Image (cartoon, rainbow, N blue to C red; front, side, top):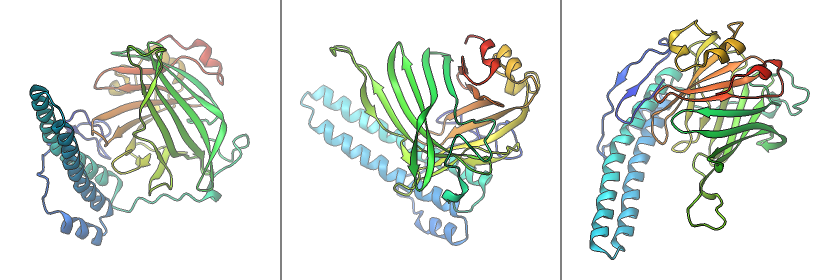
Length: 360
């Protein structure tokens, strides 16, 4: 499912690999009676839809709460002109928030159609996971845990990104998870520092156990100028406050499969659809879009690369990216089709092909 804008939702459900289906996002008034419908859905075994309905109601309450908090702040602005501008902005955000709740609900229902209506309760039994990352039972060739991957970005803005597997682990609900650090800098200043926690299942799946997200911003006038922590939104941990992880990358991928990567309602709700398991440059014009030809020909010469479509529902159902995975290396390319922004591998230390990687 690919979601492209706040007011237009494009969905690629199972059976329609990357075709688009326009879904009109309907703004639903806050206060609609949905309690009975939600309970009925759960009673009928439609647990996924019931969850979407509950989240819709929660979103409406949050929009209302945010408005009154903003209104309280505006009341305490002394200057009449600034106060009126503040109140107008609060009203505008409330008007935007209401239809956004509806758009999220549409996106969640589309995901339910792809996943089915079962409860989302993945098996996180420690017996199913390896604890020794130096002796894995069934290592995943497309997401090897033990690779240092510096990444470069090309797009509307130029950022530097460094992703590497650290020599440290984290125990989560009895499962040993490897820590993968992902740092993003812009003009030499840190803007994001995230630790992802990944576990290796014995069946080959790489499981996403959570992430610690830290967003930074630097401000003119600070002496010395240094990044300031401004947000930890998106952070979640398997088993904390009811949050659940998901499959980061499957041991065996099949085209059309859809699965959740994370489930922290109203906070982190990413999901994946497998688009190709036999990608090589020239095999699919749509998947070739924005792909650096030399990079794909180097890493996908055997036409065995896996391509996934990853999308997010919260905070706005408009985040969609294609990710390209090479055997023995892992993800080497990320593309946001809506903007043409590219994140590509510029170096690694585990494969001789990395010595010939083209510059971004």
